[in-house]
Image 1: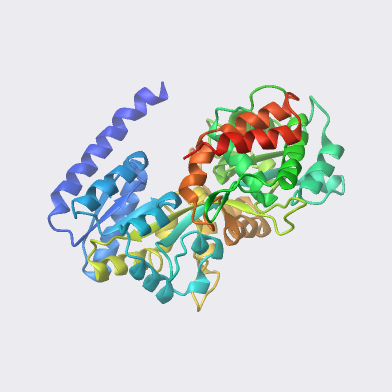
Image 2: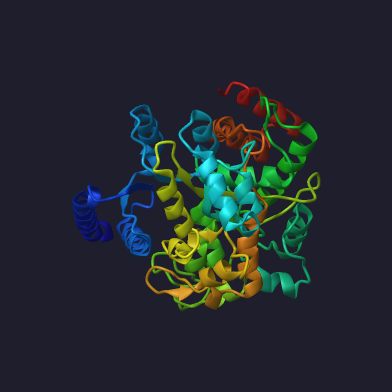
Length: 451
């Protein structure tokens, strides 16, 4: 019923925005493609463009593009010599577009150098690194999190779940079904959520299926450690086909000690969204569960003591067809004087990849923590969570990783993940249908066929 009410309103806003864009298009100096196309987010970007024009005299046409169409739109525009000046894009396009000649990496590198390389999260820069600089300018991102009941960990004298060993020790101490499950692992094979969680767990133990020359297959010893760990957390989970929905529901009900989730849970956890309320108390607007929660972004397996965080980063790409100087000024503004406004578009999923300036190194983290989050109610993250938790949330971007980025094989790694072959074989192992060595061999056999 809610959709039938809200959809026409959204369409009306989109239509009005489209008319406004059409009316001003001929006056714009540069064009900016954005995948943040929801009406409220688009309106904020229009406001930012207006503020930038006041400050610089450069008019910006903000053009919404669906994320699913972005790749084909960019390829077609490149062929026609009609690329926009700046594109807000996902990680998956940074290096392929650089290699294809769509992006002007010299311009992006100059922007990063001018803003100060050491003011950016190293992980976010590393994912877009080229031989001579960077393909695009990192804008924002988020890191996947182990969300856990810090109050129960403290009562039991447990260490935070920063390693496989710590997670297993916590399961041993806290798993008491059906009142309390030690974990809620992702086990629904056809859900991307399982793919995302598994990549994080594999990365944490240094296990990857790709190298600089392409597919390498998983190292058997590291992968068996991953499989044994994942089977243990699955056995500490309820039976059935589990994904993000059950994870959140059980944690919100006080029946799970640990889950893996994205930061988009943070406002819901604090009782700010009526459609997903915590049920641990009788008050669905209570922030009590948030106060009892801790998070870990970087965790480590036995073969990778440094561990890894799974990160999703977005970038500003300055294109090969851009009015370069004006495009650079727009990106510098959006990452400088306008950066807090950039993050305010959706603060719960836009962690600052630029922490501050040379004069004020923590400026943007501090500003971000004061931005209101939530749907039915609003509150700043800094009012809901302790500073150490805010630091952990942002700090994950310093060490964020993804398969194939460092090796220059992100496209192949993405195809491997999307095949869901890893999900299927891991589920077979969890269910006791095959042993660990067979599981590694079967994964490698199936993934070798991915092109």
